[in-house]
Picture 1 (cartoon, rainbow, N blue to C red):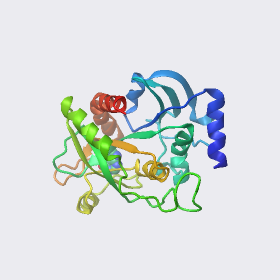
Picture 2: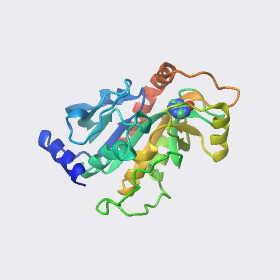
Picture 3: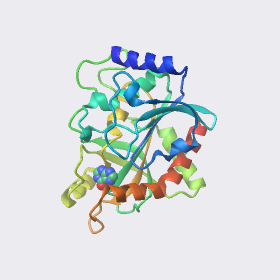
Picture 4: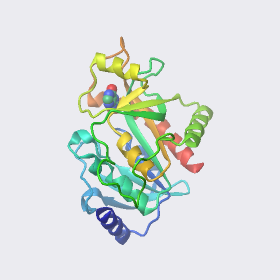
Length: 269
Ligand code: HPA
């Protein structure tokens, strides 16, 4: 709690702000920032106790500004377990954003499809998840100030926002599914057998993020919306060798649609 308070105090000393919405942008999906009327930015490395992003495709800074009429804080660059951080580090910024005052959290990510109906660069609104990460950020002494020991997970993703996003996608004719996201530790992509196994488990898309952030958000009773961009197909018969460049290229195709959807969704809150 002390470290969270110190990070919050530092941010507030730099810029007086009470953002209503927090946004975390995934691999190849940073362009939403271009829609933000930026008032202030703070590099992660300057914020006490903030981890520093190491993946090249992520730049690490907090952006404060307005998206449409709403005050937002955007994490440009996020932390992944595979980079070597522990889960408390991965999720630290979410707690900081909540204490800063955010009322809802919006997350994007790149993911591989498991559902055969999905195409490259389609969007998938996450309506539930399966957690296969090896560590839970809430393990250890519970921070009672933030939330309960045993957080309820029956509404991991806010059902109202899921419905609103699907409706907005229909109106804007954006190819968009809703489904279950399974989070794996990475950094290896899946073997063919693993893609099949994850499908049998009940997931529609697989990625290496989002669930840790969602867990700390729900612990604090923060409503959460998350959306995947399908960057590769993990469906037997369609599986090809994947490079990070291909993941980013597929994300870039979907990025304008995803940006529009999140912007419209935030305008409805
Ligand atoms: N698997 C896991 N993580 C991913 C994938 C995938 O196929 N694509 C983008 N992130």
